[in-house]
Amino acid sequence: MKKNRKRILIIIASIFAGCALTIIVIIGHELYEIQANAEQAFTKQKSYFRQSSFSGKIIKRYPYQLMIKYDSTAILPPMGHQFFYDYYFFEPDDSTVLINVPESIYKITELNDSIIKEKGSDSLRINQHTYRLLSAKRLEWLPRVK
Image (cartoon, rainbow, N blue to C red; front, side, top):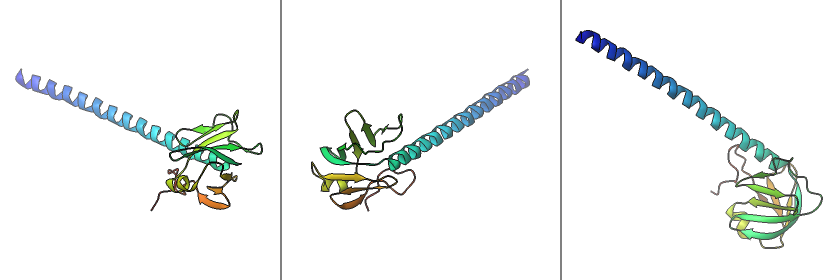
């Protein structure tokens, strides 16, 4: 009788261990898919911003963010892709864009500075000088300071 009880407990423990392992594998797969989707969304939004084009003047400065009033020739990302918190936010009704910038760009800018972002460019032209805005690394938005 005791031998059968031990065998039954071993079988039940094996079933529970198998179920736990299956659940761990399923959760791991789901987490991988979530990460892959997040990476895809990040690179897609970065691409949309890269393809935007605008020129204008800085109307507000927040720590490491600039609000730019752009002119009517702006090329904006398609509807549904005009914002990507915490990196950029286009407001077509006000003709403004709020963008995160590296500390190096933030420190050299002032209100009413002229800004140009060309289509396909990773850089901003500020008062006739060009500064890198987007990182060359796929999953990094702002370039790292060395």
